[in-house]
Image (cartoon, rainbow, N blue to C red; front, side, top):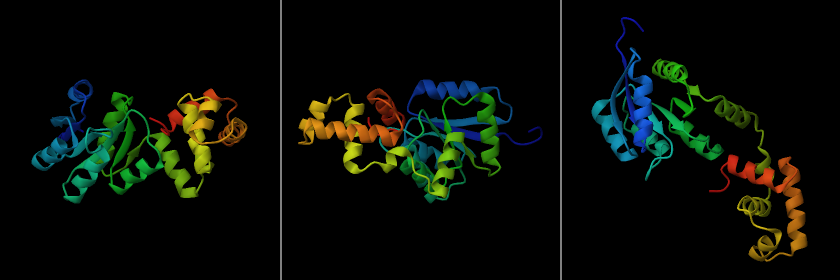
Length: 214
């Protein structure tokens, strides 16, 4: 990037230690200039209008409005900022679609390396989208119409899965949904079969991984 102006980057994250980490990660990069930081969506949107950075590194899970909502608002205002969303865990299809609708330029995990982050910033600045490989797989799956295992569950089966993930026994689940324990046992078997797992622990881990429960 010799001879070119540094890419002006703003950081939006509610955790000071994360902001500090990103500053440290990018601080010695000659092609990147950290011009500001914010701790929530409202402050981030205000600073984006004031500073007009080239790139905004935006946390998805901000207090109040989410990073996706902030990105959409920034885009709606016509600000010349390209947003790269950062997250600790990839969201579900709905969250991904909201991010795409907000016209974000990237969606990355926070465990990204310095080299990967710098490359992503440079790519986004050139107008090239940068998405985590898992997000790319989600986009491909959506394009081909392929469904995830839990998307094949009926509403009742999904309720059973969520109860399993919360550690509830068949007896408690039966009480919660006014079912017999035998009926619950049948539902559990169907859920395990549809998810392609062999026991309740694996089912619970699946539910957590796909953010089906808090």
